[in-house]
Image 1 (tube, rainbow, N blue to C red):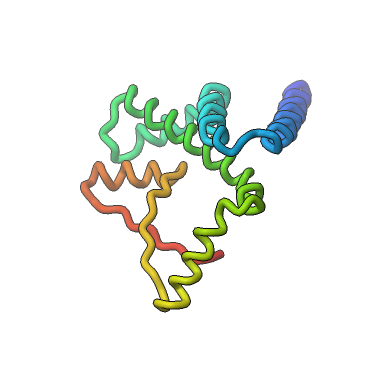
Image 2 (image 1 turned 45 degrees about the horizontal axis):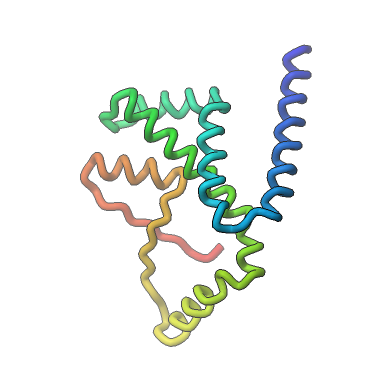
Length: 150
């Protein structure tokens, strides 16, 4: 009974924090979103004990030959990048409205129209991509990502 109330309270607090964060982001300069997102991700690492323990267990069971300190460092970076990418996604519509992505969109569409296709290499290293890249690096294998427009 008490556990259910505690869970509902936790969810309500998370909801209020999330709505407050969205309200603050509306006034936050875009140049602050990356460091703010990384800081929130690091805070999530500290506060999300169950997810942190699960991540550490998974890293320990992986083929990576990492010691405890390296596993914690990798997981902290995963949380920081997740926070950065979540904040980036939340502010994407603002950047699009301000025209920050317009030149990229126009250039990529022009290339596709004139050449009929393109191979794009990016350095997108998000939450899961970071772990996949670490596994590939440990094995000495290259990383290839294929994607299509959703």
